[in-house]
Image 1 (cartoon, rainbow over the protein chains, first blue to last red):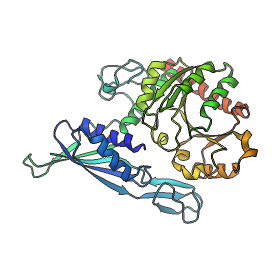
Image 2 (image 1 turned 180 degrees about the vertical axis):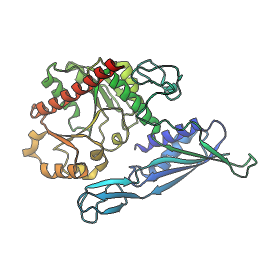
Image 3 (image 1 turned 45 degrees about the horizontal axis):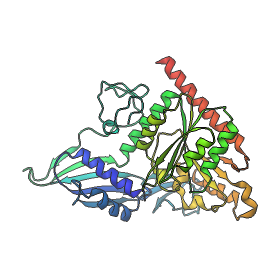
Image 4 (image 1 turned 135 degrees about the vertical axis):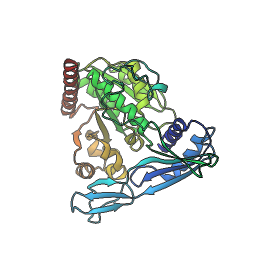
Length: 109
Length: 280
């Protein structure tokens, strides 16, 4: 349930960056390895946004794929989630990308 | 909050640039190991008439604020030569028992201060005070982890003396604490043999994020089904840099190597602060 803290951080960061106006849309990049469940984040975002300039904002979550390199066979592999293993069976993976948790754009009316 | 000067947390990110902060100076041309959020977001006006919605390309890491406050804590700790560990693990893994035993075995070889994080009660801080050290309890309420802002406030209140060994015991949880940098020197995950040997597979992020694994309650091994080598192999597969200690905290087994590592860290942090002070 760290998604509530994540949602609060999103609302706080945008609240500080957007001085006036009503936020109508927020786009967040969530990497497949970011340890954030989009559905939980969506639920918590509504809670955190209530009573703020983001109260009616539509949340768009852009999920980006995870990538890793296997330390056993050397292959670069796609990782669907943080628990994914290499096709060779190894879990010894260096993550190369897909752990971003980032506010991309904000639409203000 | 700036624990050096007591600036309020509200101003932690936009303080007076002329106001120096000791070990972590926020002057306009100060050196930082961490990035500040961009001051002015790029703005484009759709349609150009100013009445249509504006699209702001914010491009900010969601945890940037926590990371910034963590870097501030790190600077504060470095300035004082305080070595801080972030102790994580499931509820009941034996985190507090490990700290009690650590204090007992260190036997005054280092000053130990403790920050305890729990959703409710001051039980753990009381236990640590009874063990003979200073302890501050943070109650996180509904929050399932400690964050850098909480630790910044705790540092200001606890005000650990130079060269102190600071143990921060996080909320019992193998998921959420892994995401929040506190500014600590080392992340320690405690796993006990009563939990099941598949914890690294179930909670890989925690084991990836940790620097140290303490395998605890080894005295109970004859009574439980727990494959030590399997657990360690899976943890090291995820994170080959993990340093492993094997303990039975309540019986006092295996604590000397763990304490030696803590003392080495404390000496390193102290020496670094001394060097920084003499070259300043």
